Amino acid sequence: MSTTPRPIDSDADTLAVDAPFVIELLRGFIADGVRKVGFERVIVGLSGGVDSSLVTALAVSSLGTDNVIAVFMPYRSSDPQSQIDALAVCESVGISAEIVDITPQVDTYFDRFPDADRTRRGNKMARERMSILYDHSMAERALVLGTSNKTELLLGYGTLFGDMASALNPIGDLYKTQVYALARALRLPQSVLTKAPSADLWVGQSDEDELGMRYAVVDQVLHLLVDERRSRAEVIGLGFDAAEVDGIVARVRGSQYKRRPPVIAKLSNRTIDREFRYPRDWGR
Amino acid sequence: MVLERSRTSVIPTVAGAPGGPVGAPSTVPELIANPAGSVTIALAQFYPRLGDVAANLAAHLTTIEGAAAARAGLVVFPELSLTGYFLKDQVPEVALTIDSSEVGALRDASREGGIDIVAGLILESDEHRFHNAALYISGGDVVHVHRKVYLPTYGLFDEQRYVAAGDRFRAFDAPLGARADHRWRAGILICEDLWHPSAPALLARQGVDLIICPSASPGRGQLQGEAVGTASSYDVMTRTYAQLFTTYVLYCNRSGFEDGVGFWGGSRVVDPVGAVVAEVRGAQESVLLHSLERSAIRRARVAYPLLRDERNDVNDAETDRLRRRHARG
Image (tube, rainbow over all chains, first blue to last red; front, side, top):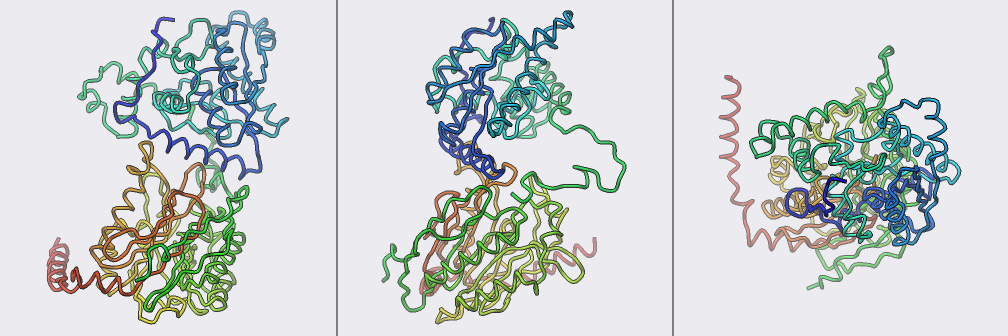
């Protein structure tokens, strides 16, 4: 890995979070969202990374150890450290992990398509994991919790109908640096807090290498563009690199489709999600 | 002088069952000693079930009964307490008319319990316009209707798409369950109405002693804590208006979540010098009981005769001048 492992500091600026307050709010969000649809339990795809580790810890804090199922789903090329970290997280919050190796189903499929590149393979792995989570969701009557943070969602750095799929996402309005702040406050295992962020879809993959930018910078730029609604020119005027800002803007625009339901051809007078507008919590 | 402690009581309610609002006090409410000129009020920080009027009405009736047992003269429910807030296309489906059986049940409860009620609903007019409204019900009658004037349609709000705006801010005599031995003038401002200072100013000009603010305020901008989120804006507004208009402000916010948006609670009573004298700390369902003192209004207006000194003539003259200039284009 080319990036030096280091904690990401979020305490310096506008990205600071009042961790106890936000954690309490998210505990309430999870309990409310799960129970009002008639569930008691949740299921999380735990990778050993900081996002899914934080979601697991929040879920246990909200619902108790009996109501959280963590599923670790390695592929043969997964970094061995991922499993060590995932199990450490489970131990620290008092639950056990279910391990489902996805190698057989992924390899069987790509035996038929041996020329597939690593992006296709990575997407396939993410979708296999999703299908396993949703199968367990049915079997265990447990709602699938999402683990995509705001940085990933805005950049489109995730697999549509793969890791982006969930019923409830407690961390989708938290930038990566803010996820770290909460993870530190919940005292997640040190290795989870300090290793370089990676989707671990292939050997040596690193988020920041792939994005070509550091999260500390990306998060500040996204915060300025999205939360403060500053213009591109204003952000560059604040000293951020023009090419990086343009790259971020292009990624956010280019991935908008991933954040929306599929497009429906408009024919009737009342089309779903256009004129037919009901809250998801309709009657809940 | 009555001790501060005896003037306030918070009754936590049973934590909401899955999706189910629970308005019933879990304990027998403590009676608040009411000296002459004072009256107990209750703020019901309630979690309505979205779009389920029948369930919400049942919860209202239970809470009203509990507040009446605590000898409260008034119980205030949050904005849209009978329906929930982010209704979208459910607005026409949950709308009630003033002569509906649901409003009738609240009228009966007010008469039987000897307690006044402020409840929120979608109120349908004869012209089939739908208003975000709050009713003041007393002794079996609807004595005042406030239709929300300022409908937020920005950020996460979309009210103008679904509901029609009200067009007046009127004060009225609040019997307070006939428990008060003095005339109390009240006015209602619903949530966003409070963000426009002309609204409480118009009520103050009509001599209100009590501004009742039912609210459904969603938490946002909360990453750095409550103190910098929406709660801090309401803290400033409720204290400022109470102090500048030397009135009580009763702020009743709701609790719970709708589509992932959390409502932050924090219901409170602010006295006529701008001091928060009772408050629910947090977003949990609860009923806040507090004794309002007529003498506190008198003391505030002796110390700060701001209303006496208000130059309505100047205000009117300047408003007329601006209106004429506007008319000329």
